Amino acid sequence: MPKNFLIIYAHPNPESFNSAVKDKVVSTLTSGNISYQLIDLYKENYNPVFSSRN
Image: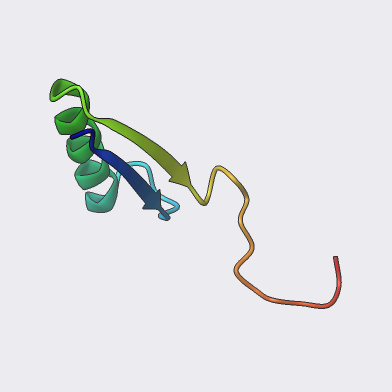
């Protein structure tokens, strides 16, 4: 059965512990030939504030 994972990552510091955890998860999935998609909210310039203005 195929496995697919979605990783949603949000941290401004690429040297953080969170980044190290994300990198380890990605390397583990890659070495296991498991498909995944990574969404980095900071790279996407995601704005979490809901507003009627654009």
